[in-house]
Length: 159
Image 1 (cartoon, rainbow, N blue to C red):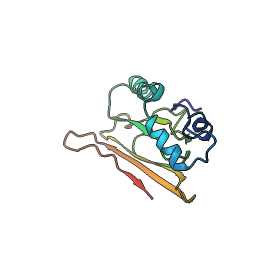
Image 2 (image 1 turned 135 degrees about the horizontal axis):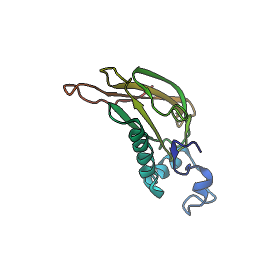
Image 3 (image 1 turned 180 degrees about the horizontal axis):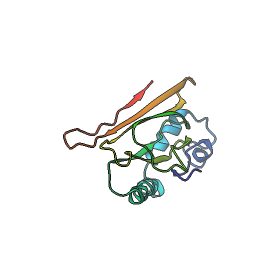
Image 4 (image 1 turned 90 degrees about the vertical axis):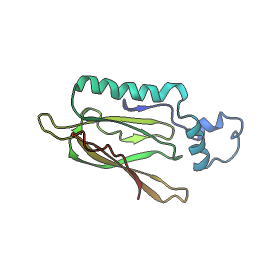
């Protein structure tokens, strides 16, 4: 498991341990449902928050975006691409999570460029599967502006 992903993957083997699924066929919807119910299991959300908070502490003052992504799609999400309009990923060793398993939190810290009066504006695309087996892409974008007269924005778009 990557250092910036938190929690146990909710897959068929985990569902087999639950009485309601034992010995029965499992679907993507079943895995997604159980991942949704397990969102805060074993303090994985707290661990993801602590991870980005530690990166923020190392970074110090300045505009930045503490990003948390939870996968309850029933399938693994795979990193496809990213775009940095203003800023960059703070943890160059880990970067964006390459894979976020079903039932896992992915975490990363996006910061503004040092010495520039700009905020943190970027986007990342992940690819998973729909129920019919076709690819589904998810665009996660954020805008944490530098000036107090702008508002933060975080759209999530299925493509």
